[in-house]
Image (cartoon, one colour):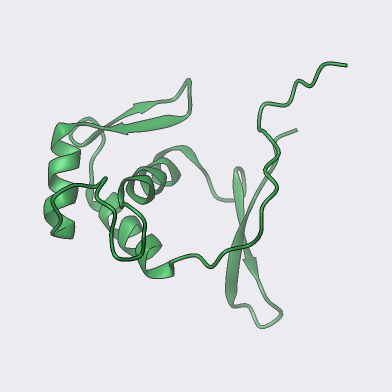
Length: 115
């Protein structure tokens, strides 16, 4: 039996997401520009910050390094890179859907499986 899954199954418990960190990363990603701050690799569906991108992100956040562990126990690097990936590589209602409650309030995001 051969498992040909492209995405590994991850079994874990639910943890609280730092919403303010995601919002800050989103705002910063909107200010960064392709080919100036990062490179887009469409084949591998990934974006990579370059030296200018790291420097400008660190300056905007007022930190020494995106990899420095902050008071919340996490570094900024994955949040910034994920926000750039979301901005450049994922399309609403194609790759993801915004979840709402019965009152129309946004409550989360669901990834749309292409298979």
